[in-house]
Image 1 (cartoon, rainbow, N blue to C red):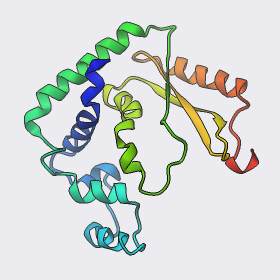
Image 2 (image 1 turned 120 degrees about the vertical axis):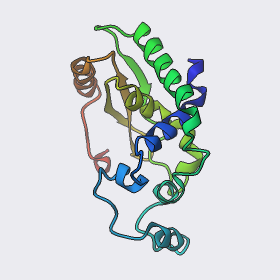
Image 3 (image 1 turned 90 degrees about the vertical axis):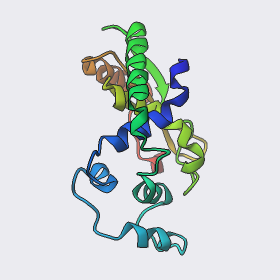
Length: 181
């Protein structure tokens, strides 16, 4: 899908613009806010004393930079989301699901998520389009870390994605604690 080439900017823009007049912390914490100073915590990160990892600190501190939060690009991103919905729904019907990786790697090392940021749209495109998506654990890598698959369906077909996840879990042995591999 060529329209996915700019998916990361679209997802970030839609997430941050959905905040409207709220701050990013309120959006990401559903209005609960944070009980600490994000600017001070950002400095504390470099001394290993932060409450959060680097990525949330970057989002909380720099979420309203023009690169991410461009109101002039809203029509472009809106049309992009409509293209995604149209194209995905042309491939999906009431009996069809799309299987995609949940993430390209298992648990990344601390702070390496920044390098993997371009890969988060695999999950986010379904959040933005409102199409149902269910994550299903299916196995473990060589280090015993869990990995899974994302099952996406057409609009209002959540039951099918959940049913597929149930069957895949049965076929692959179901969920197990990472320490029991």
